[in-house]
Amino acid sequence: MSPRVRPKAHLGLFRYSAWDAVPAALAFAHLALLLVFLLAWPAMTWPERLLGAAAYGVAIGWSLDSVSHNFIHNPFFAWEPLNRLTSLVLTLSLGTPQTMYKYVHMRHHAGNSDRIGKDGATVDPISLYQYGWDGKVEPTWSYVFKQFWRDDGPFTVAAKIRARRPKEARQALQEFWAIVGVYGVVLVANWRFVLLLAPLYYLGHCLSFLIAWYEHAGADPDQPIATGVSTYEPVYNCAFLNNGYHAEHHYRPKVHWTKMPALREETRAEQAAAHVRTLSVAHFLGFLDRGAAPVPTASPPKHLLSPDA
Image 1 (cartoon, rainbow, N blue to C red):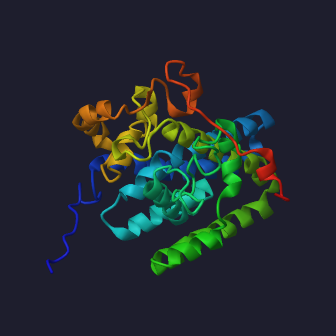
Image 2: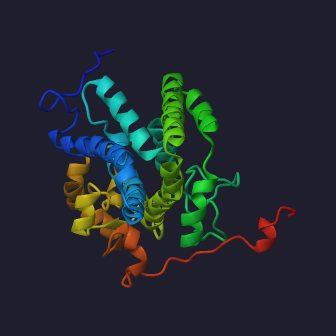
Image 3: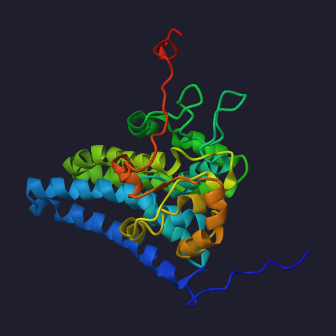
């Protein structure tokens, strides 16, 4: 067996690219700004507090689909303790254990928003087809506002991780208890702060699910090159670290975010042959794209949703 080759460190610090200084700095800045918001709370007016809470919600949706997302596929640092620290920082700023998010997201890539199989389930736990009907995806707003409540609980996710990766399961639970401890202290110290942020926490996840819907609605989960929907809108891709290149990302998930434009050029002919769907606007504004063909949607008949069915 050949010896394990360690990845080359860039600038002596970053595992894949020195450009990862950007998302790494954003991860730490996100948590720092949240702390500033908490400390500044007593001196703020209610309009300022509401504006800060709105920014908090948007930041959750943004990070889940940019910084936190890229960290899953390509951890930033060559030194593992720094990656563990970054995982904890993301955990505390997002209120979601990063290691659990990684598990769910990798299941998402395993299924690529797959259709319901013969066992009546999807491989992807957030597949658009999971609560759709008649071979169609779930309607947009049903998916956006309900998907958060369908997630498995933290102990269920930890148990699933433990089945193959006990060390990661321990880290996942440590991150979960860090959230409980830190936000428990904040709740005692300033319950109004937590109470205001709670609904924005939910809406931040809804923003991420809105992005997810448009990242896959109209895609073909049976064609590897076409399992995502891309948008090349430059402002969105700059702010979200090239998340718009979503067909490319699902085709080769380990390709670094800085290399997405090159991957697009490399696969342009294959994408054209597979009729890969694209949007002219950011994913979260997909409903404004009148040039894209409508995606058929359907919900299960009401009698099948009844508790007595």
